[in-house]
Length: 285
Image 1 (tube, helix red, strand yellow):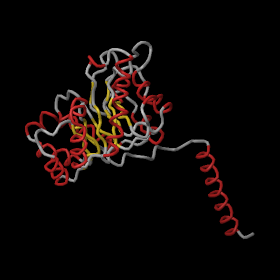
Image 2 (cartoon, helix red, strand yellow):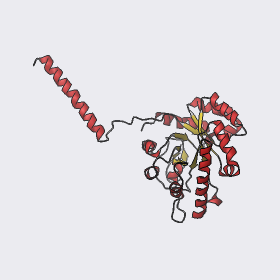
Image 3 (spheres, one colour):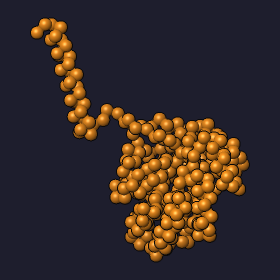
Image 4 (cartoon, helix red, strand yellow):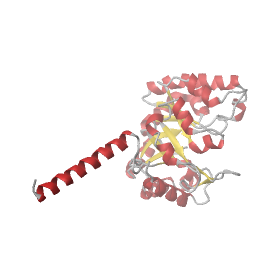
């Protein structure tokens, strides 16, 4: 074997050894660095509700300029479905979901679903249950029955029904957590869930626990952050204690398709949504 041939042989052997080692490392679940990122970052427009009320077109324009591609509505401020759809198109935005109150759905679900479809939503999401309607297990069973009735109506309109949690669904009622009741008693073919990550943690729950026990049920998530104990104050996404990369790494198991930034009481809404977008656009998991 000539010196040149020997060097070539050793170099080839070295590359092969590296390849085998890398393959084995991958087989053992060892990754050198996170490699996935969010394809789109969305915003729950409740975060900028005062700005929306004063100037809806201008606010949507600012949201799009920051880099958001999706928005979730929480009211239309007197605009028609056609006007909302046109504003979304003008700003290169889509709106997969809208929060629509249970009272509105109970009053006229046919019109609510028709309007949602006309705007271009895919999900109609129930955002909240008034306190007087959720005091007992029997109360929660009535809510579950209602969701199971609305789910087929949404499907008939070409939509999906979803439910958004706060912390009270995580806190036991007569020894049972309402969110567990809802997940186990609603039809997965008809009812999805939008997990508010902040409120699950605030209520003492673990998002990953729910993902493991109820896979593919969480099509949507609200991404909001917590400063942690003692007051668990809401902060801009990425400025707090919630481990978003760890949560996002389980997105396939959870079934997550859309991620919406939210902050209930931002001191400076535009600064908050800009900071949160910057973090989520850069995060890897």
